[in-house]
Length: 395
Image (cartoon, rainbow, N blue to C red):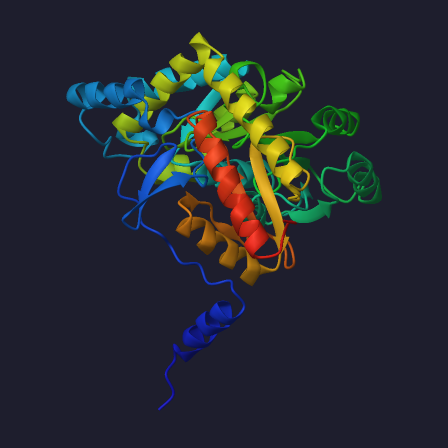
C-alpha cells in the first residue's frame, strides 16, 4: 500500500545527496564570541549578535526588572488588551533613534514585512523588488497579491527601466530593497533608488534588518548612512540581530504607521511582544545612544578580518559590511569546509541553495564587536589550515 508521505523521504534523500540537508546544531551557552555547540567550546562566527547585546548585563538586568513589574507575557493582541506602556515607549524611542515620524513594533522582522507589504499594496498594484531580497519580503509580496516585478540586484538603472516599462499598468507602486543583503554583505545605492522613486511617485520601503546597529551614526541604519531622512517611506527592522533580542519594527511616515495599526495583520491577530523582550530592546537603544564604541569596534574587527582573509587568498565576494562570505561555490565543499573548521574549534556554517543560488555556496562569517584580536587571529589560522588542506588556497 503506497505511503502518502514517501515523497518526503525522497526529497530529504535528495537534499542529503546534493549536500543541501541542513543539520541543526545545538547551543548550550549564552551568545557571545565563544559558544558551547554540541558539547564543544568553539569560536562563534555564525550569530547575528553584531554588538554583543544578546548577553549584555544591561539588557539582561532590564528584562529581569521589567518582569518583576509587568509579568512575562501580555496575553493578548495589541489591539485588544496587549498594548503596555512599555510597547509605546519602545515605539517612541525607535522613532527618535531612526529619525522618523512614528514606529510600530511586531513579533519579528519577518512579521513586520508580512504586515507592511500586504497593507500597502493589493492585486491592482505593482511591487518592484530587488532580485536578492530576503525571503520575508518575497513572502510579503506574494501575500499582497500585487504584481511582482524583479529588478537586477542593486541596479538603479534597471529599476528605472522596469518602472518605465510598466508605467500606467498599476494603481499604486511600491519599491522594496534590503538595506544590507544578508548573504553577500553588500548594500544598494539607496540615494539613487530614492531619486527614482520620488520621480515616479512610488512608495519606497527598505528592510534594514542587517543595517541597524551596523551602518549610520551609532548604528542608525542605511537611511542615516545616506542621509535620506524623510525620503524613505517605510523602514523595516528587527531586534533579533544587532539589538540582541527578538521582535520587529516598521518605522517611517506617520500615515503609514497609523494604517498598519488598523490593517497590519500580525499586529491585529498575534499576541504582543513579551515584556522582557521589549525591556531588553529599550536597554539596547540606551547603549547605542550613549556611545558608538561597540559599532566602531565591530567595524575595526570586520576590516581586520576581511583584509587578512583576502591576503590569505580567500574570495570574500562583494561584501561592504561586517558580513563576510567566504565563497566556495560547491555546496558539498562548503559543508566539508564547515565541518573541518568545527574540528579546529571554529563555528562557521555553510550556506547553500535555496538560501543562496546554486553554485554560490559559501561559509558566511558573522563578525561581532565581542571578538578579540586573539579570537580573530585564531579563526584566521583555522581558515588557513582548512583552506590549504582542501586546496582552496596555496601553501
